[in-house]
Image 1 (cartoon, helix red, strand yellow):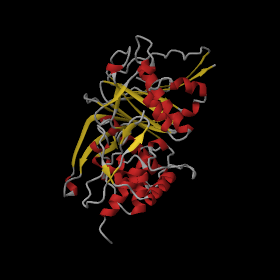
Image 2: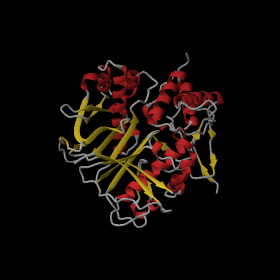
Image 3: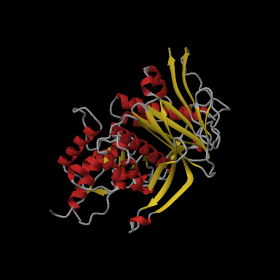
Amino acid sequence: MRTSVMSQMQRSFSIDLPSLIPLQLPSRRETHLWYILPDEVKSTSLLKRYSQFLSPIEKDRVDQMRGDELKKNALLARTLVRTTIARYQTNKAVDPGSLMFKKNMYGKPEVDWQNCKNYNVQPLHFNISHTDSLIACGVTVHAPVGIDVEDKERKIKHDVLAFAKRFYTTDEVNFLATILDPEAQRKEFIKLWTLKEAYVKALGKGFSAAPFNTFTIQSKPGTEGGYSLCKTSEVTANPLEKTEECNGRWKFDLLELAGSHYAAVCTEDDQADEGAFSVDTEGSIGFSGLFITSFSFLQELL
Amino acid sequence: MASLSATSLSFKAPSIQSTRIYQVLRKPSSFQSISFGRFQSSKSLRLQISCAAKPETVQKVSDIVKEQLALSADTALTAESKFSALGADSLDTVEIVMALEEKFNISVEEADAQNITTIQEAADLIEDLVQKKPAA
């Protein structure tokens, strides 16, 4: 199990986009994480080709974005989702444009396999997240996934502890309060935000199903980058009587992408197996239980 | 092809019956669906009765949004401007709501905070909450 960071550039002289490189589906214990850095995509002709993949509704949403940067990022987000999912169809070359999406009853996007032309049905789950400078897509099989990315340097306009008191749990506020350096505190706040967002997105039932102050995420002692979730019920009159339910059902991982962003990954796991942490000789890091690949792709057209 | 769409607002039922205005928007493209925090909800579209906020409130909200999202002063914002179309993510939305709470001295419920998607919705919610505050 390893993480490999690949940056791939292909030069193509054909007028059509080259066919997508196929991918093997992740195993049940793996999450694949793919990302694009929008600043690396500069070719307007390339962006035009990408827009061919989008459905009319998606094109509409791109047009609604205010400003060229936001339009471009919205386009790239849809391109990333479509091309990534298309690549997992290993038996044939499929058109990313013929993927159809639908929403679950709470509004979480999913693949609408019934209506995809030429696609084999796959137990594939995905979730996307983006900031101005990074767009990411997580893929799992058999289990829902939620991801959230944030710029490490993102400034919070409000006082971090006041913000946390308003939205996080008491345990999380207490944890943040122990961090004296404001920069370090801000970073931990952001990390917690991405982890909590990733959980809500993995759950897929909307924010009201899991308000941020009803669950605590804390780092697992003895692991690096491992986190666990504890549900707290704060509805008791006596604050000392919090009922806590810490289950291993939800797996978290927090990593840094491109040196600039935090990315939180959350999946559901019915096998409560604790993963070990290993490093291989190529300098990439693996977590058994989570396999993460990052791929920044850039193709130039003549 | 013109199609009908409606803005749906997630209010708690106001305790005071006030004058209601039936708010319906016509948009040339697809339905404006109810936004559910991070996702666009596909729940059935409901036409809801809502109270339209005062222009001054809409202006104040616009100013706060511009500041939070670091938009240029000449960015044209309308009441219908969607936070997501301006590049706001969930963290931005929550910060905007906190700034609105401070500005208007109100308190917004978590669920309401995450469900605000446009300037109009924010302004309407603010006026609803301000109206419900006990007289000083």
